[in-house]
Amino acid sequence: MEGLFSLLLLLVLSLAAVFFHLIRILFNSPVDFSLDWNLFLSWIPLIVAFLADSLTKRYGQIPVILAFLSVTWLAFFPNAPYMITDLAHLTVDYQRDLTWHDTIMLFFYAEVSLFNGLVSLYWIHRSWRRVFSKKTGNILLAISLPTAGFGVYLGRVKRMNSWDIIHEPRVVLDQLVDSLLDRTAMVLSIEMGMLLGVLYLVLWGVIRFRIRYSKKNQ
Image 1 (tube, helix red, strand yellow):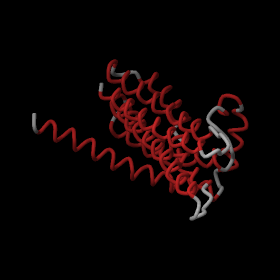
Image 2 (image 1 turned 135 degrees about the vertical axis):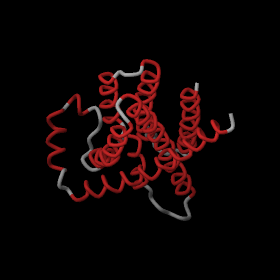
Image 3 (image 1 turned 30 degrees about the vertical axis):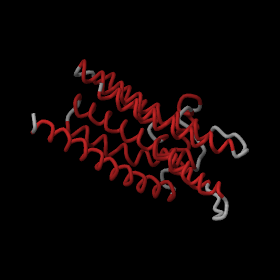
Image 4 (image 1 turned 120 degrees about the horizontal axis):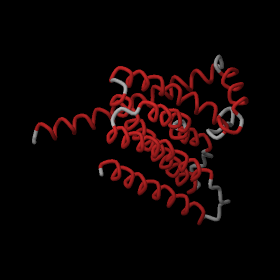
């Protein structure tokens, strides 16, 4: 029920973001559903992590299944922080109403997408710690953060997407090798990883405090 409530809340936030887009369309602007598509993609790692958390909680030690779900999760996880880079599309005109609407709309989409990513990170991290060990779970967490930043680089700069892993694996491998020493890739990987890490620590701290406070008052 706890997980379902979180999904429901995030769904409401996602619909609110789409409502902002509908208002934008009413301004007679060209219809562009790329924001909605990107928001949808941020739901994939959330659903995968929800399944991983639910299955490991119910069935316990299922390392093979969790490993498969983890790889799938990691392939789509960069789609969540990716929407932060959509803020680069802003065209600034302080006397234009749409400037302020677009600023709020893009931030709202990025915020909801980031919420999806952070919640999915919490669920998959909890699954790792439950099935493997706390140390292994924390190591996998540390690896996933800059990896997500590198995935954002591949999506924004190299214009690749998660589906290319299936459709064009050779191209993905070539791009990975070519980008390993790219300075922009390193900067984006490190800084995006730091951003996700700080936000996740806040989320983790709030949740753990709530759990300990509830147990203390039982």
